[in-house]
Structure formats: C-alpha cells, structure tokens
Image (cartoon, rainbow, N blue to C red; front, side, top):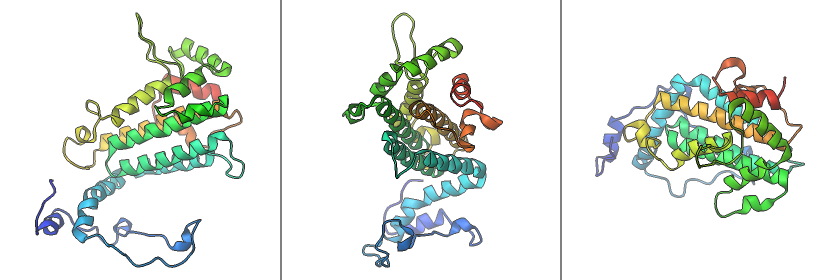
Length: 297
C-alpha cells in the first residue's frame, strides 16, 4: 500500500478503491453555509483559489475514508455512545455567560475529546489515545487551579499535570477520599508514585496518564504502526474497542476531578455509563467506588 509515484499516480489509486454506492448516505460530503457559523459576515463563500489536485486529494483521504466506512459499518452503537458522551461533556462545561475558572479548561478538553473520536473513526488509534491524554490533563489542571486559586500551576513551561495532581492531593476533602480509597482498593486518585522498598504506582489519574502517555510517545507496541501491523491507516476492530474503553475511563476520571472542584456538579444520564452504569463496561473497583462515593443515587 505504498504511495505510488509518477504519471500513473491517480490511475493506481483509483484501481485500489471505488466510490460508495450513491444510496449510502456516507457517499456524499456536506459543507456549511456562511450563515451556519456563529461568527460570520454571511457573505457567500468565494470560489476555490488554489484547488488541490484530484490525485493529491485521493492520496490524502482514501485510506482514512475507507477506515471510517468500515468503522461505521461495524461500530455504529459505539459511535453513538461516543457522540452522546461528547455532548454531555459539552453540557457539563458550564454557563458561558457566567464561567468559572474551570470553564475554559473543560472547553479545551472537549476539543481534544472531539479530535480523539475523529482520529479513532479514521483509524489513528494511538494518536487518538495521545489526544485523550490532553483532555485528561486540561481537566485535572483546571480543577487544581479552581480549587487552589493558583494559576501558576497552568502556566508552567513543563507539563503541569504532576504539579496539579500534587496540589489536589494536598486538599483536605481529597485527602479524606484518598484514605477511603486506600483502605478499599489500595490507591487513591491523585497522589504521586513512590519508589523505594515497596513501589507505589500513584493514584488513578497518574496511572491513567501514564497509560495514555505510552501512546503519545509510541513506546513499545503503542504506536499506530504496531497496532495496524501494516502501513495505514487501516481498520482494527479490537483497537477501536480499546479506544472506546479508554474514552470511558478518561471521562470517568475527569468527572471525578470536576466533582471535587464543583460540589454541586451532577452527571448526565449517559455519562453515568462511563462509571459502569447499565453494565456496558466492566470498570475497575476504584471507578465504581468513586461513583458510589461522589455521585450517590
């Protein structure tokens, strides 16, 4: 599946692919009109000024389009879940007319979540998991700034995730939750990893961040190429299922942080699924216990 060169470029790519049947709604592309945008002068779009060549467009899109068709052929229910979760996260961001400190951080996380879903739909599984890490980081950092009032946590040149977890783990309410979780499952949410005689891998948020970081850094078998076992992108059903589970865990951990920063916060109906409600996912003990403790029914 290597990219061909020379004058027969488009002929070879066209021979490797075919258009969808016209009766399939996915065979058409849709674009927005100027007045569909919130900020627009509403003037008609200008004609193309530098239209890409057909063979270049085909080269850039055919493999990713193939994956998106195969994914939506076989994972429609999962895609619906992801869209529902994404929509409920946007609802949870807050009131744009009266935003708190956390508002902007959660808005950034929503952008990362949307990008991650789009990338996974098109087969870039490792890259999508790395983007999930950004969503988790922005949420945890925003919660730390909201609770402590220390904006310097978010302004560090280096990753602010560790300092944000440190700041959160020192809060009285979170220390009480930590003690409860330690007794029940052996680790809390934000505390740091410790070495020495008995290694402690740290809290849930740090463990999840480490897991997602393996995809960000493409370590071991966590690169797209290792997942595809090919060049690509190509559709890998198990990899997409793994991605959905990582989204669920990322959202669950993020919602725990949000609840600690916003005491009055409540989950949407669909968001309860990321904590195992409805039995869609088998969740770890810490996920279930955080749900029972912070979101009692």
